[in-house]
View 1 (spheres, helix red, strand yellow):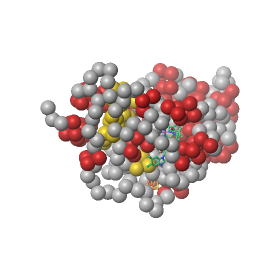
View 2 (cartoon, helix red, strand yellow):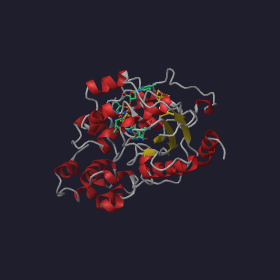
View 3 (tube, protein in one colour):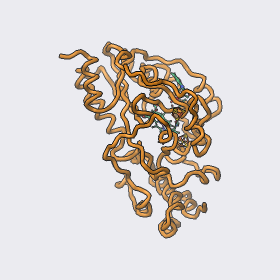
View 4 (cartoon, protein in one colour):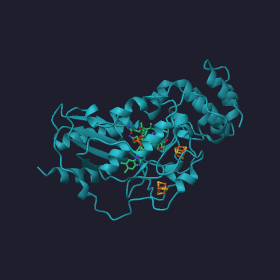
Length: 320
Ligand code: B12
Ligand code: SF4
Ligand code: SF4
């Protein structure tokens, strides 16, 4: 059988993704992290505070962990932005997609049952720090991990394992630059000023937070910048000069043209997409707000004016 690094390289080529292995399994706090928590930049995402001590060591997820395989999976950036659904959430739910890819890798690497755990997004794992530590890329001014040759338009997922795997730093042989240099395009393009510099993101200002996480009705300055977004925001990813959008055949749950149809969506429509875990009232609240930017939005919004949830009713009457 080929050695681990050869298997990994073949897998990267076959899946058109990037992978790296690190044996670093504990992470000191960063200055940005201190600022993020001291200034309560997490907003309603209280779970981030609870996860904070757990994120110091991957042993909180897999007590026997010795190595981590971390993968960056590129996603398509919509040609036109702002878009109702951000690119990372097009097509199949990325949690399932990344999980499936990593499960194949577990089999290829021959990891024995009980010796590994796959994490995508929701485990208390500092995924961007881990990816940067493993050498997959660098954390840009946008806070996103930028992968040389792909860009910031990647999703991250990792296999924690008790196996002793060889580190991969030498795998990354390209000579492209590994910093943002003097570029500040994402900071200048963020519609709300959420990017504080040096990769620090004030989530309370981020449109992704307001459309995917927050249960609060958006404040007036957020309502002014929201545009037709109903789930996520592509701006800081799209403007990055390193972004190379792959040509996947993924499609969004709903596009700008068909946005009025979304007022009739039920949980069934959201199934197997990244929006599946969004409560229906938040989905409809976001749809009602986005319809302010659709030429035929007024009629569709009327249908939500008597919705049982007060935020949906309020959004249906919200002016621009
Ligand atoms: C909560 C969360 C959010 C929140 C808060 C975002 C934030 N910047 O923290 C909101 C809802 C706003 C959000 C938005 C988005 N998110 Co998000 N999010 C997460 C989640 C679940 C936790 C992040 C977290 O703990 N943040 C709190 C801070 C304190 O922790 P941190 O992530 O470890 O960040 C610190 C390090 O980067 C460190 N640091 C900074 N510089 C350096 C340099 C070095 C060398 C090192 C070692 C460390 C370091 O300091 C940072 C700040 O303290 C992660 C998944 C995960 N488990 O990590 C996904 C994740 C970060 N999100 C992801 C994505 C795709 C997005 C969006 C692009 C989605 C979209 N299109 O709408 C936007 C991008 C917004 C942005 N510019 O960050 C991807 C990022 C992929 C990538 N290329 O980096 C992740 C990794 C999910 C995944 N599995 O793919 N997200
Ligand atoms: S996702 Fe949008 S709002 Fe959030 S930091 Fe990036 S550009 Fe700004
Ligand atoms: S847009 Fe510029 S500053 Fe922002 S992440 Fe990309 S290279 Fe870095």
